[in-house]
Image (tube, rainbow, N blue to C red; front, side):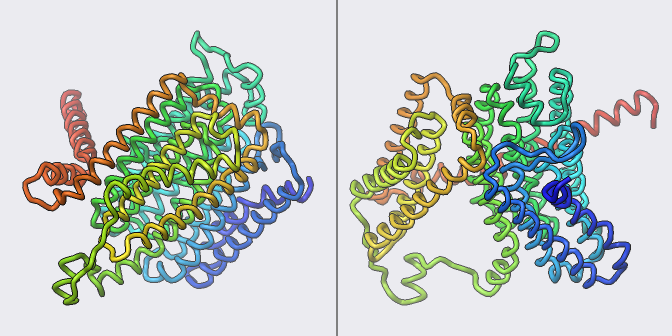
Length: 564
């Protein structure tokens, strides 16, 4: 066993050792326990970075299996990228918790649970066989229940932690079924051997049923439950009642584990195109729903929870388009960004208590600051052309310069389409804001958009080559997500015409100033939509009624069987 093997095994062993030593050696000494835990986590981060640097310098392309027979850990680009992310965010959360949890009971227990969670996620992302993956997958859900319910004095905390526990247990069952099905059909537990046999014969059947499509569907269902996809999303926004450090750690490899699972089973899913199409539909619905619900929350952590739901929808949608590496890039960027937002949420609440944050709109500026606002607007037709054309040109040129064959992949075209919609919406939103110099605002937005898109394009393509060095597998993922070419072209044309028409109508309506008039159809639609969003599409109400009905039915059965 060389030093690489030892380092791979030591990566999850360090936080596991810390979790075991804290209650034994530190007792109730809070500061000593926190420093020990932070020290072990810092060593874990350092070890993950060393392994990443070594892998980059060694130019190794095949995954490295470390273990005995068919049980062990994998050293590959996916496990390395996820390990650095998990260890890095865990270290930040540990340092933040040093003072944040100082007045909470169970201080040593909390740090021990954080270490156990870090170790479990590291084992999950580097698992080299189905058995290890299942054990770590289950452990992450179990430990999350304990962390979310850390404060046992609050009844709501325990209730919502139990919601998460039940959802995760339901999501574990499909993954267990997929593992048993694959082992029965192909006879191996280790992932490299399993994927090699699937590539050699993807059409194996059991009892007349194709194994690979069914196993792919079960894997997707497990990913949907873990990543809060509609309609299994209701647990996520209500977990915000738990400690803030736990909310931040959830984005290091817990709630975004669905994207990791899709990437880990990419060699399986390229033979199950219908599963990828389902992932696209579910991810799209989740992204739209989460993004809409985020805008109607008055609790900052709950708003961040729905924002996470929307981003997880985008991540699963990217997997459904065959852009597996882009989903991992999205996962890492969102994990770092959202963890920072959660750890800063307390500062936002404190600032809000000192300043109500009333926006400086026309009335505020005129009444409070006693000065008129000389708002100038770009003509509506020119603004509409800028909104539609500028993002399309920037996105198209940037991707064409990096990869000329990018436009031959349907998934890539859909991603560009959504990028165009997002960029156009930014220009549209800026046009709506009153400004004394709208051309300067549009220029600044254009430059920012250009820098972000070019940087994102370059990084995304380099990261794709790192994560999937085999170009055949990269092309196979996009090909598996493709649909009939005529239907695809008609869909893109239809959506483009609808969106461009909607923007033109909206710009023209704004030029007539119809939005501010009471009693208009626009205001009626807005109020009804806000009511629907504020009640969260009544999903939680439906679940509440279903649970009450199940409890009532269980009581009647108990009485009928004379158990009570």
